[in-house]
Image 1 (tube, rainbow, N blue to C red):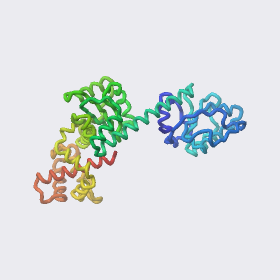
Image 2: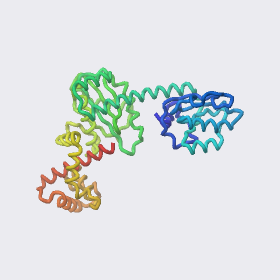
Image 3: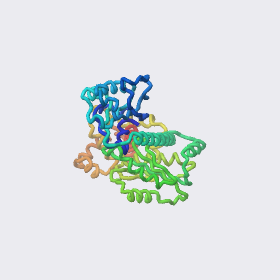
Image 4: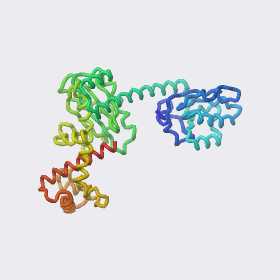
Length: 386
């Protein structure tokens, strides 16, 4: 948790940042209360008053008669490694300019309460959020391992036990992803589905979100049920892409289902579709496994075959046309529409591409080799952007 996340809690949403705007990324590990600790009459050992990475709450009562104490307090909090000072504007509506200026110079956030928020409630909500985040991090770490590592059956069994969920026999997984222009908190509404997932779970992974359901029947209509729930909760999905796994046995195929959903969603972006089922990827599954098992080998092939198009001196229109040509499955008219040019321009570019990368191949071999290289190139681009 950092100061920016602290300000997104329901109880702190009306707080105002009045100084130290560049310090909102400071980590927050605790919330503490400042009463009279910086009054000259108090003789504590100052370096043990507050723990580092704390948001310090105060009504500033200690400086009621002596506003000059405020500067020393802020200076000491910065030296002690506090993350921010949040004050209730009961004694001071505004803080002295020298205090705000000093905090701004040191990227130390000073926050003003929005109303009559109670210190104790702020502390409780912050700690509750931290516990939730710890659990989410634990889940994310486990799922990352299942997706990225080749785990044994014993390890799968152990991991499922650690998740401590009443999973049913078969697992169905959707991976959701939003466009780059979507608000960074786009995942939040989807977590409202969690109460419905008695034998499933929701978890983020990289820039995507997994929605996991298990069911005793292989015939479970996972996609239909999921979209019914999304409609019930009025969660907009116009800008969301969906990748769906096949039905897998929970105890043995959990990692496979995660990977299927994740890579199916990658190919929704490559093929510019709203959704994709892994079972419909056909030979693209081979490219996924090749890349997953040996990305270096796969990219060596891409770099070698597409070298004339990827060269810094190459015409960028050629690589863009090659990509669109594969996405549109060789349909010249559709490529021309997507590239905003005449079909003859596309034919000219494709002839030039062919001359550069595969001058002696026949039509079928050329398309096959170009499709393989372009899809691996796009797959690599999507994976590295995450």
